[in-house]
Amino acid sequence: MSWTSSAARIALLLAFAAMLGWYYGQPLWAVVAALLGLVVFWLHQMQRVQAWLRSAGQPPPETYGFWGDILSEIYQLQKKGREARAQLQSTVDYLQNSFSSMRDGVAIVDDHGVLKWFNQPAQTLLGLRAADQGQTLMNLARSPEFLRYFNRGEFGTPLEYRTAGDAGTWLRVEITRFGDGDRLLFIRDVTASMRMEKVRKDFVANVSHELRTPLTVISGYLATFLGDTTKLEPRYIKPLQQMLQQAERMENLLEDLLWLSRIESEQGLAMHSPVDIRALLAELQDELGTAYPRRRIELEVATDHEVPGDYRELYSAVSNLVVNAIKYSAEDSVVKISWRQQDGAYALTITDQGIGIDAAHIPRLTERFFRVEDSRSSATGGTGLGLAIVKHVAASHGARLQITSKLGRGSSFSLVFSDQGKATTGQPVSASVA
Ligand code: ADP
Image (tube, rainbow, N blue to C red; front, side, top):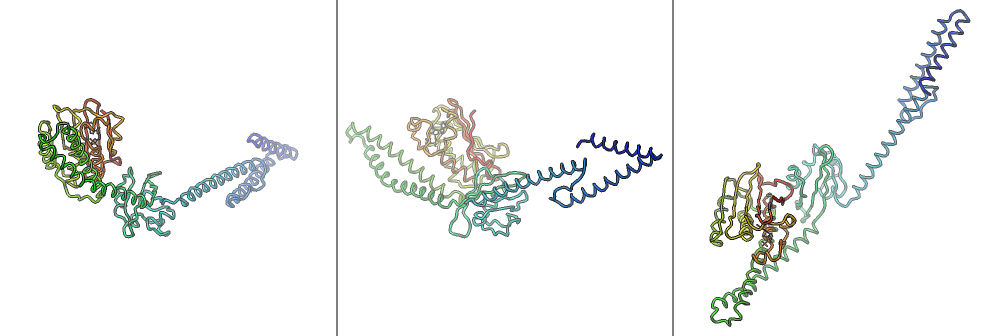
């Protein structure tokens, strides 16, 4: 019923009252009496509406005219609200059920670090109790590695850590932010895959180790034969030289494999005493000066900053980068090494004016045995493991490997260390093409 028909009914009532009053000689009093009656009726209706609103969930009382319309509209709104709430609740229940039934641990932590919710696997993996819901996660988590990772707030790369106490359970934790600073934690038991990974690494290390002795014997004899070529039949000289060259390549490969598996197994355990990069570069320049006497290597050290880490690992990483710069550039070109402060971090940059790398290859450079072109590396005698070593050393020192290159113009490889020696970004390797 609309406003106009309600107004028309009131007007009709007043007109009728006026006519009746006129008939009895009191038209004004009759209109006043009709208005009073109307006010009393409305007051009564209001009181019923109030009583109904207080009794939540009941259908509206039978009312008449305009009041009936208002009540039924309120009732419809209430009904829609209830339905929307029920739908939302069922969605929440559904999501909670699916999270609860996951085999991985799931936990929600709010912006104040309070554990809002967790499923059964999260309880087991993190060693929580059901009553811990509503407690601060910081007071409950036991692993210092987990606490450091959680507090640091850089969740670009997941954390893998060994839980304290029990028989070597490895957990992988991924944290995602959502809402107003809330965090969603996924926790997975990766002990089995870590064991497999260890078996693989041990196998590579053992094979490399076992192959080293026979190879040393072979290359030793070959070197002896070639020591005095006058006693050799001329047709054997070239094949023997090639055999020695390949044996030496294999030796280099085994050295790199052994070194890689050693730094992999030491990852996270590296001795973190300050490394004097200035001294490291001076030693490297010395060594390279002997190995490549004709190459021009320019050194620019603009800071005395020391990097917490392992000297030998850092030395091997920088030496791989510089040797690559030498290998992949012309003999008369310059290789520059610089150590300086850069945008609040410290960058060790090796720049060459060599053949450069196509943009498409850059993301794959640090993969083991990846070569831009096979011919390129066999010509230079590379093992394909150098940049894999660099990547590992960078990761264990919280540094980022930044690669910039232009085909035919040269490349620039930087190890970027943050001020505190921790990761400057979640991505251990980043690339850009000039
Ligand atoms: P390798 O022992 O073959 O040099 P690395 O892992 O050190 O293996 O390098 C992987 C590949 O990246 C190399 O085979 C080479 O193609 C390319 N590369 C590395 N450094 C440079 C550089 N400074 N200039 C051009 N190409 C490079």
